[in-house]
Image (tube, rainbow over all chains, first blue to last red):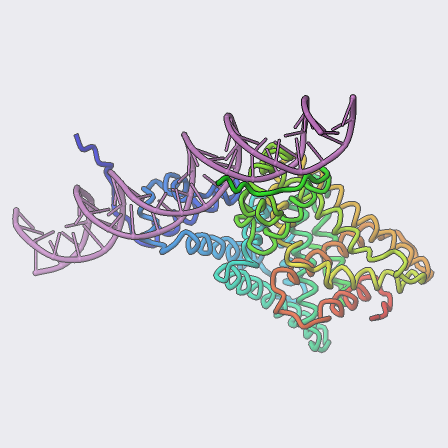
Length: 208
Length: 208
DNA sequence: TCCGTAATTATGCAAGCGTATAATTAGCTG
DNA sequence: CAGCTAATTATACGCTTGCATAATTACGGA
């Protein structure tokens, strides 16, 4: 009479990432309130108790999901490392274009980001993840900006504030692209972003 | 022995706005999950049942709260209309500074904005409100940019894309200011925003 | 002053939540 | 192939939630 559900043992990493994937899917589809422990477990093909085995608390799982999402976005903006050109100015240009174009500007990603932004002011773990991913992106941008300026024989004193402003610019465009995809012609945002950066840095960035 | 809680009857508008205020306060302090029906009622000085009398569902109350906040927020960015200087360039400068400084960069506002952003992709009504408030802000910015450029004897062909980029820049800075208030020195964002706009427009904006 | 009404309180319920804990079993180790 | 261990399932508890509904009472109009 005991029809206990059969199961397979799977590597820890696999299970953790399956749970994280399920969490992201659910939040993207139905908002944070849809990501209940039971729903996550079902989506990941396990029973709810298992979550406790890998994450001490649900909050911890959500934070891990957020980190996965954000680092994934940063890397997507980088593109495949090989694809980036060697010339610092061209590389910066490609990076900027990527950051405001699909697949980075995916409505799903924006929705997920918005969901986690809600938690950031209140949840210390979320805040830590947000800070580190934010800085991770911004530092990459700052390095590229500095390289580009240097290659043009310019000084790099203002790299930090330029990176802050540039990061904000990309963030803002990214959000609008995801939230209001129909408001902009394809490629319009890329073109706007690159022109804006050209002015910001007083550099002639090529529109690849 | 019936010590039933005494109460006063108050006008409908007063009660509704008291409930909305309580909702915003609670979300600001403890996130959406803190805004329970019971907590809202307590904060507003009534009993939970009364909420049902004014709002058919909690969702309806939350939507009303969002709308109240958003319309107020756009006006706060404008500052008091009188306070803006007459000179177009100076006016733009003040406007930009306001948009990335308290009270506009209020964590409560950012958190609520994030909450609505998360609904935008899923909810048509939300999307309409977002679009109109976004365009409302951007159009004001575009007009100011055009005025400033004109007053400097420059053409205004690029006002639209400059407004899109400038709006994105302000949005991004605003979000970060609200989400990570400790990451930036007081006034730093204002200074960064104004410098960035100076370059963006090739105009010398004064740091008031 | 009294009465009707709707604004307000009081009570309760059913569902869903996160989490704790015990029981099972898959799969490696010898 | 026997036994150990930890990965996994199963069960249940206590709490909170939103909402419905019944009981009261403030207060303006006759």
